[in-house]
Length: 283
Image (tube, rainbow, N blue to C red; front, side, top):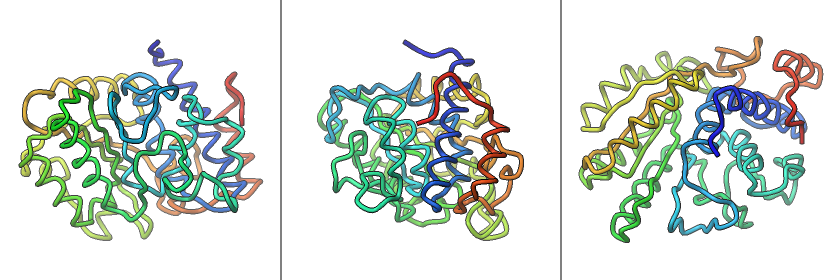
């Protein structure tokens, strides 16, 4: 049953609590982009994507597929997989620990349910998603493939090669998303590589482009519905979600300094206080 926007907000708050607690416990990880993409992926996993942990299979047949191209953003990924029933919530406490299934980047080596593709070498995920989308077309599987990229990651040439291929192959079952928070590990993306107008770039390749507010659930869900409506058009869709790195916590918001830094215990306490508790409970 679909969640209301208020329920999604509550879940997103809990996911952000999970992200910060996981990264603080591990003393490493990437909270900034995880926090900026939390609302996007909360809406995707709870209201938009066709998936079922009980029948999940790695070949993706008979279900929608999600690929995390920006593979360092595992804190949000793992939290949502746990919160939607792919593995126990208590396992979140093993994030980045020796021998864990919850590695720093998604891995398929230990058969963690919900993970279709190892990722983390930036730029590769959209190629994998395009390949899966093509396979679904060949298999006459009517389900969709989703892929989340980063805006800093989009400096990688392989992203643009995959974009060109997806148009050539008519992959209208591919819905890509970009967490457009304007920051990357070294600073603002415009200062690092001058990535410019992403909407104009994707449109020039021949993609259907939708720009949405990454922190407004009405905007997020409208964007997904518009993207799904493109099925049958012969054109892939890119949703550019305008977001804020570190969203939800005052001292983390809008700065690249929290791209890959773990909060100290006293910082975690402040962050959790700002976010507030939810009835869903911490892991």
